[in-house]
Length: 401
Image 1: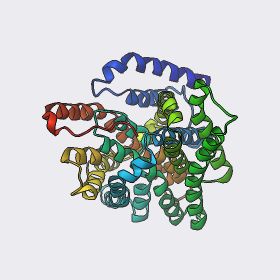
Image 2: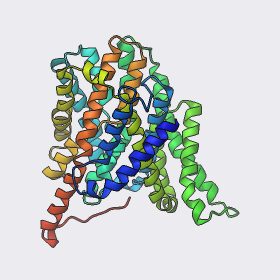
Image 3: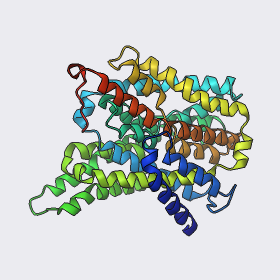
C-alpha cells in the first residue's frame, strides 16, 4: 500500500502542475491517472499489484461511487426535482432502456456475443457515471437544466441498472437473485438516505445543541458516514442512499450543504483520481490483447451510436435546444458503477465471465478517455454561444440548487 500511495502522490503532483494547461485544452488529468495506473500495474511495472479479484478493488470503487453520489446529490434540492423532473425522467425512463436495447444489438452483431451475454454487458454499461459526469456538471458555462439532467440521471441510473444486472447474471449461470429482497434493498437505500439526514437535522435543531463553523462543515461528513454504515449493516443499496442523502441535506440543511460544498468537492476529486489510478492498474496487456478488434469497435459504437440514439429519441421535442440534446446524448460516461457490476460478472462463475469482464473494462477505458477529453471543448462552445447571444435573448442562469 505504501507504493500505491507514493505512486498516487507523484501522479497527483504532476496533475497539479499541468492542471492549468489541461483546463484550457483537451489534455485530461483524468486520463493521466488512468495511464499512470496502467503503466504502474501488475501487467507492466508491477508497482501496483492489485488485481480484479482483490477485495480492495471493490471497496475502493464502492467508496468512490458513494462519495461522488453523496456530494453530487447536494447540488439538488427537493424543490429543484419538483420543478425540473421531466428531462431526467425522460432520460431515465426512455433514454436508458433505448440505450440498453441498442447496446445489446451491437453486442450481438458487432462483438459476436450471444443474446444473453449481450443483454448482460449492455446492462452493466447502461448507467452513466456521476464521477465523470461531474466534469460537465461542475462547469457553470453549461446551461443549468443540462447539468441538472446529467446529474440526476447519473445519480439514479446506477440503482435502476443493478436489479437488471443481477437477474441477467443469474440467467447466465451465475448466482440466483431474490427479486423481492432486491427491491426491498433498493427502497431501504432511499429510506435510509432520507431518514438519516432528517434525523440529524432535527437533532441539531434542539435548543441545547449548537455547532461551530468548523463542525458545521463536518456535519455532512458525519451524516454520510452514518448513511454508509447503516446501509452496510442492513444490506440496503448504498448508492441510492448516498444520492438521496445528498438531496435531503440540500433540502433540509442548506447551511450545512453550503459550508461543506468546497470541502466535499476536494474529497470527491481525490477519491475519484485515486480510484481511476487503481482502475488503470487493472488494465493489463493481457486484457488488451484478449479483446478482439470487434470488441474495440463495440466500445466505440456504444459512445457514438447507442447512447446518442437512445437519449436523442428520449429528448426529442423537449425544451432543450439541439446543442443541449447533442451534449446530453454524447456525455454518458461509463465508470465505477460499471466497474462494480463488471466485477460481479467476473466473480459470478458464469460462462465466459472473464471475457465479458475484459470487454467491459475496454468499454469503460475508452469512455474515460473520450469523455474526459471533451468536457473543456464542450464548455468552451457553450461559453462562446452565450457571448454571441444578444443580451435580451440570453437564458437566465441558475447555478445553485
